[in-house]
Image (cartoon, rainbow, N blue to C red; front, side):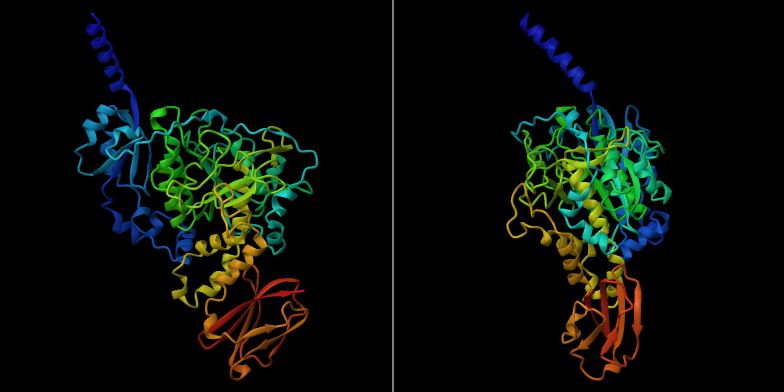
Length: 560
């Protein structure tokens, strides 16, 4: 009798197992129409996106090409499957069906390269892990809030010397930031976002969860995050990039934790790329799911296992500065950073308090392949944010806020790129290193623990005054080796400077002066004197470009 009961139990269990809906990604083998798209990039990318690629010397390739629709149609025609999403970058379709249907329908199709199940035990290359994950995903946005009586963002901006960037006119102007998050309720009505609305700084958005153009919905987490970058209340609250433009994308369905959210994030990043976005902020992270069979292990935090991290790496390689929160797992069982914060090219941000001490909740690195993560830190404890319900300034905790604080300043620093590109065109051989790599290196090197990174601090807290100087120093003097003797004296300058170290006659030289935003404020061909009067210029940072024939040198100067 016991054998009969056991057999019955086995048959019922097997039957239930075979009917369970599984998530899987179908990776397609090719894109037959690639050539026609690559030769006509406006079919798939905006002009701004194309310009960004050209400026950063990033080629347009097959990953930019849309998926081959006949392949997608063939998948859609299979009975019993549901298409949940897809990624052109990874050439993958996210489906849901029983394992039996997936195995029987797609194992032998010639255009299917491979199938990856969210349940890694079904995959031939699944990595085994003995780590047990304990995490309640429903607490991921449960940040403690209290009334913020004095109403100031001073601490979170000045800790990073963000005020120095703003004083130089670098306030995010001309930059486009995509905020990928869980929702943006009341952004279209709250006073703190009126400046964005009045100046048409919200360019659009999309709700990928509901497949809806109404992106002012969902969880309030995205509203809080956006406020730290673009919020503004006169004399009370200023985001880190108040003059930036924004796209708002909802990909996170807060009440649940499912693999589809990874796919939706990649879809949003692809949309951001096609629109020419400069910076992406994501205050999201993935390790465990409602179905524990889909959980990741720490070994998977290697930057190349999770679907979202693979997508984030491609986004960065397309020229987008991707900034991501490290996660709030530092004092939990998981402890470590979350995906996509493990991706090599993502700027991963941890949290400190007002005294620059690490916040206990800030996730630890390194990645499982032993890379420094998080790289940098910003204020994440008692951060000033805008309450989505009543527009009040409140205090909140989480790397969810250290990340956008940092993303805004990254965008401000990146606003200096327009100036740098003026000089890069003179010697294209010097442009083989993506300017974004210069920028990230400049920020990391400015951090207070750069020489001795640790698992939770990473490189530490950056100083954006130092970072700006590092960035300019590493990129502006692209031809310095040809005119090494040229100097500007004195520097800083009050009214007049001298061009020192000239070889030959001064009239053989050409002088141009640019402000911090790259606007030309002075030019003199065939210079008549070593002395240049700039008494009429306002105080600030300028760049003197000294040229002779096809050679030039650029020197940063300060006008007092």
